[in-house]
Length: 318
Image (cartoon, rainbow, N blue to C red; front, top):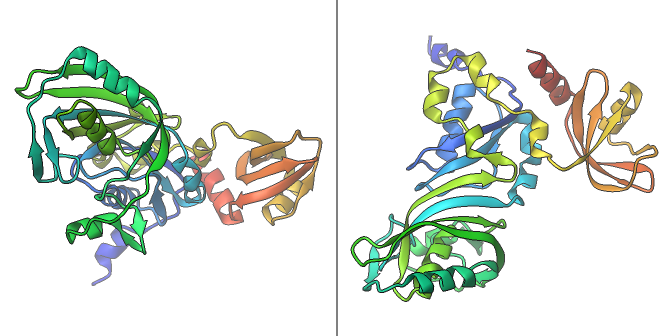
């Protein structure tokens, strides 16, 4: 009898990418576990975590897609955020304690100047409240224990920083902005740096990721919507595994060569040199993995297992 509830959520192989609109207050892992449970998926992972207070685009990888999730970490991202001026917090966002308050006397000219100064290649000191590791421990663990750790500045690029709205008088002064940036950029730190540049300090009161790589918020589904769906509707929300491989050159192999490539063998052909190649079987069409082409030789990179290939094919046909 004790096994009955377990049988009800029998796990199964699920392959693909689910673009989740992460709810506020959830950790990325909590959101992943909930989606994994709703899909009854055996294997899942996320690419690029969001803070609990952040919402928006969180790509979740299932089954074979977990093999390529690393590639997506490199993607550029866009965020919408609101920075409250005049108040600094211990975490750089609304979760922390207020550590300083200053009057706000900011002109539009000063704001334009500060925004220009934070656009392009900049250096950022990662926040203490972050998951970056030092000596095997996350920085936020040191922060919780009240220990400040030396962090070296990192080079990041802010491709665009655009003010959407601003209230610059001291009562409730705030700036809503959108930032498009390279991987590893901390928007909380960007908000704090903006506050420093304006001479009054700031912390983020809202943060939403609106784009990561090619994925945009309009493609995302909420946990609430997923819960209300039938199982077939949930499965229909999944993007194919190769959604994680935009910009890869495509090489298609016949049955015999596909089998050999899948077992890790190099193949020869008249393909142009390419660093990033998505390799497919022709009949029936299926992703086999990634590789690169050098001097007419296709060299395997990350490969799916034969089981994953046939399961993905089956899933696409349903």
